[in-house]
Length: 144
Image 1: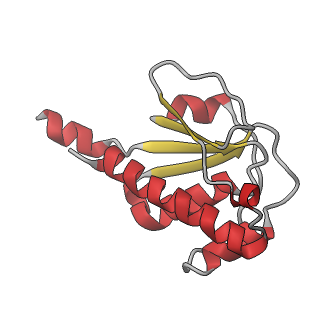
Image 2 (image 1 turned 120 degrees about the horizontal axis):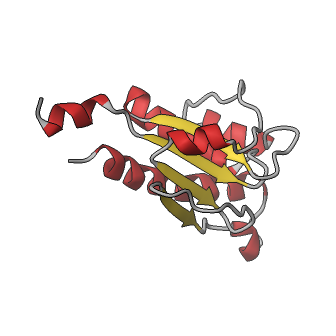
């Protein structure tokens, strides 16, 4: 068996984390699922999971034909941390210890509210920033 075929059998897995798992990490997970299909296993979680998803985050993905209405905020678990190849923390609120042998990135995402941009306009900018990062990550996870 060549190294190439053994590599092809292992589907890369990524965990997107934010503090509440209601907005940014859900956006990233939804965008990656749409882009990657079955090529990447996608998880999302929060360090302090909220009670529900951010409705604007849900709506901003719906605009792109992505339905995450069945999702809900989930905690980060050791089980998932041990499964994934990459942990991506979105924003600066969520704190997590790096897991040995796992890629660990912090994405300081665009925060339009600091420029006075709120509501759906804000959420679209956040979504589009995350989408560009997800596309780059997808290429890295599935590339040669």
